[in-house]
Image (cartoon, rainbow, N blue to C red; front, side, top):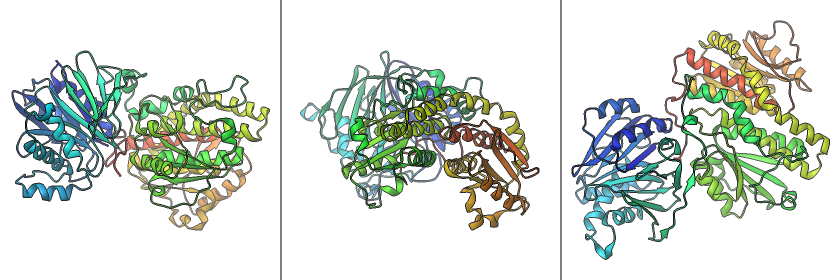
Amino acid sequence: MCGIVGYVGKQKAASIILEGLKRLEYRGYDSAGLCVLQDGRLDVAKKAGRVEVLAKEATRHRFNGTTGIGHTRWATHGGVTDANAHPHVSSDGHFALIHNGVIENYAQMKAFLSGKGYTFRSETDTEVLCNLIAYHYAKEPAGQNGTNRFLESVRKALDHVEGTYGIAVLCIDFPGEMVAARKASPLLVGVGDNEYILASDASALINRTQNVVYLKDGELVHVTPAGFTISTLDQMDVSPVVDRITWSVADAELGSHAHFMEKEIFEQPQALENTMRGRFSEDGSTANFGGLNLSATELRQIDRFMFCACGSAWHACLVAEHLIERYARLPVEVDYASEFRYRNSPLDRNTLFFVMSQSGETIDTLAALREAKRKGYRVLAINNVVGSSIAREADGGVYQHVGPEIGVASTKAFTSQLVLGAMLALYIARLRDMSFNDGVQYVNALKGAPELVRQTLRQAPLIKEIAQRYAKHADFLFLGRLSLFPIALEGALKLKEISYIHAEGYPAAEMKHGPIALITEKCPSVFFVPKGEIFNKIVSSMQEIKARKGKIIAIVTEGCELPPGLADEVIPIPDCHEAVLPIVATVPVQLLSYYIALALKCDVDKQRNLAKSVTVE
């Protein structure tokens, strides 16, 4: 959570910081603030509310300085108030600091600093760290051993911190300089033309440079107008590695769309093509993954798969579980990453771990990765962000290549994860006992998925009409079986996330084991109804709902004929291969949730209490 921007250069910092904060607002939008170092003082503007509120406040200041920091907040410690907004200034007025993360031992530090005469204006853990830096600065003799007093004060303060942080700090005694550091919270430095931009996400700086340096955990960067240096907490110098961002600023802009969620829903055909590009064998019978760093022989020795993820990615893992067990005939376990790290689950030594995270910074998923590696397991990752913590720490993995996803509710990243799970199932199956012909059929189905999604997106006008009719309802049920049960979970999550309507997902056959008690005319049920062996079973579940006067919205594969009057609304989707069906079936529930939220006048890109990248536990 939280968006961080810092600037050191020759341009006025405030306008560059505000532009960066607008691009990072999906990371948190409870409050926002900026600080510019100018004329020997720290000039601060901060307000509760969106970045646009801060922008209005900033017009009351004469921000002319060329060094500054800015922050958009997702609240952890302390309520949503002007006082709790970042940046925070030390009580002696020497330092300004912005922070993403949680300082777990802040209470002890606060008690110590209060005893030393430091005062506090906010309820945040961040202000405590700012004052701790000031405390060490006051103790640090100027110019000792030729070291930078500013940098060393930050370093010494961080030695006492328990928790997570991505921070940027200014000091009035060091005009034109900035110190930043990270631990389990993303931070990168953009290298521009006589300027340096610090950010928690590349989208904040892509309009000014595509050259970036990703900081690693335990690293500090000292930025001056002449350049920057990186070192570790234990004072070891680090040689920076400059990477290049491959996407453009247009990828992070709305274009002609009303919302990023709408844009990203309709980008899914292209996103799927990008995910699959170059990843099929020349004979068209299997998938290719160059980054797994495992030989075919090693993969054949795997007896079990373990997937860890959170939120929508967890749902994608459930689909991967179904497909791997169905086609590769290997057992798969899926666990919430937040639960795995605290359980002591007995696992076979020939277990291969996968973690899945769009951002590659999800703190619970990162912790699960580290726990698995600590116990000696090889861990592979599926994620979308090059240079992310998970990408760097995993033993290998696969990038999604879908470009930036700005909407808080995952859409194109989720269907990309689905297709990669399907490709992984194919890859493992072909190493075992899947025939060449079955592999070719499977590959052709995956290659056809983008066009099937395009066909499904053409149902948007129909789905919008249905959404407008059902937006008044306060409860929904989403029901599916086999690989579509996770899509029922995802549909319920999407509706909750962006419209604040209570919704639950269940296996369709589980209705009669309790949830059917919820059925009334005011609680619609969304059913996934595919062709095949379970069609009649799902129809039976629908009839149980209808017998109790429940409304039914049916997402039906073409070729299925429902009994007359059974469904109140029917959304047709193309008939397709089992590996592709979850991808295609996801699109109608994304659109349904989006249009219901619009009908209720909800902010679909910035939902209350949510942020895009969950970097705090």
